[in-house]
Image (tube, rainbow over all chains, first blue to last red; front, side):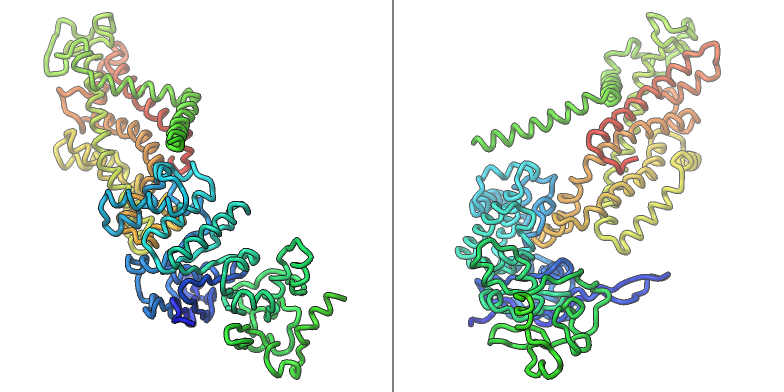
Length: 342
Length: 293
């Protein structure tokens, strides 16, 4: 494995919770706790999880829109956490936002929006115009789109514009924050295809945030599953989808709707988790998932599980994977399958 | 080629739709017509006034206190000057006053509002508390105080009104900017390395433009009213320069018999204030700007 392009080490974010008469700090919201992962150049890292699991907070910390409480973000060995949100940082990392409708200024033409990063770098007027045309071409839109306004465009076209704008500074890493969740399925496929082409031709690296696991399976090379701000399982896409180790990953995969019988056969059999994700203001002790876990046993509400490595590159945080789990009263993971089949 | 043609036609059709909606709003149309008439009358006053020489300090006692007639449409005043001609020239002063006051208040107010709304924190506290203090002083009282200290004239009246008028624009732009601050397009601009100047004036300000336009249109009427009130009290424009407020004050001595001398200049004030208000209301409906009072 080549040296990683980006390394996230122990990244945490706690938002202070203010209240009371004088606005003192009463507690905090642990949005992200001790998240670590790394990815090599050209990889696509998928971050999956429910709403409120901290996906977007991680993206915002890497972008510099939110300051981490702890941890480091190393890009090519350079720590980004201390860097302010400035030109130097924006050159390295770019982001495509979730909602193409609100990520483009409604009062500015497409050309003006794409030109923002170019003008910020004091590029000459004529070169800016050429640059805009070239970027539009890269996302397969005609050059005369530059005179249009966002309201004249479809959602897919707007998202292409957002991608073009992110590409303008030739970044090494692009964070895709649910780039297709606001789009029709047919448009989604085209955007994913475009992103794949751009990745191959420009040697880009992506962090792909989504709750759409079937999309992630086709797009990401590694997947991390977030639950309540913690990375509960991480591994290469194939291993994670074929042999999910964490009960949460299993129930997520079980919840993906499938069409064919073959797909149904390889899908893990696990009950769909009930209820809502607990509030990050009021995190349960022990494993964050124990309140909803069908296999929770004695240890789970006591102690936060450590990461158990299944292979060199696949881990999960679950007490069931401990070598002595059975002696502590845990039902083996396989019982889930049997109970479901019966 | 076809794409650009369709883009252009889309834009034309939007302009047409706006005009269509505007033209179906009778009060807005009346307002626009009144404003057009007043602005044209003020610009063309030296050429269209029946007695342009009556603007200055001339006396013509032979025709003093004449009631409205074909020769003197609004009658004549106590020294025999044509009131209609003086009203036309009075509009020049009123519009100049409002334009200067707003020409100062809008850029200052908008910039402060953008700064407070975008940066928040101590910047917001400083600017918005200063605004609250300034808002607590009624513009008319401020104008009375300023002109009592300095000599009463048009310039000082403008200064006094402008010194407080920016507060309304600061509040308006502040409230809009605060809601826009966390929009994705602002964060996108930040992540793209755009400067603060760019974000404030190229990303945020264009989104305030329609609210500013509506507010300015409404403000024109109010500022003209305040200017007329100051002149009425003798604290604004000084004779012999024709001013609507001064004319109402002079004519008031001869009420009710020679009603035209004060009522008709008064009606002229009403006419222009009403026009700007109707236009502002129409624009507000057109742009659907709720935040402007």
